[in-house]
Image 1 (cartoon, helix red, strand yellow):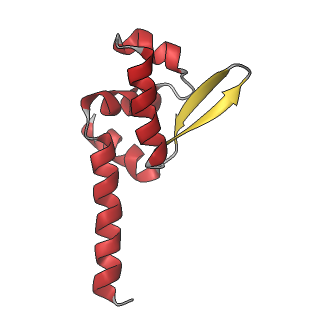
Image 2 (cartoon, rainbow, N blue to C red):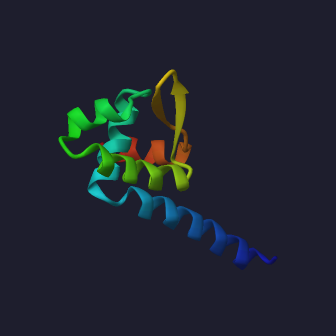
Length: 94
């Protein structure tokens, strides 16, 4: 793989991260998790005032992109932002 292909791969990865957080609800979820790590879906729902199923769909996209991870704690799952690039982006935006 030559240097141009490597650069293209890096740019594609960064673009995918930006796409994943570009939706207002996902951006709000990530911002909220940056302010208070370890939130569960119920707590997010009370802050965002949208259905729990909608939040779960957005969390699935964020998990698939490797931006957040969920940690099971008894019957609930607590979510954390794990991608360092996204943490930097959110910090720069807000």
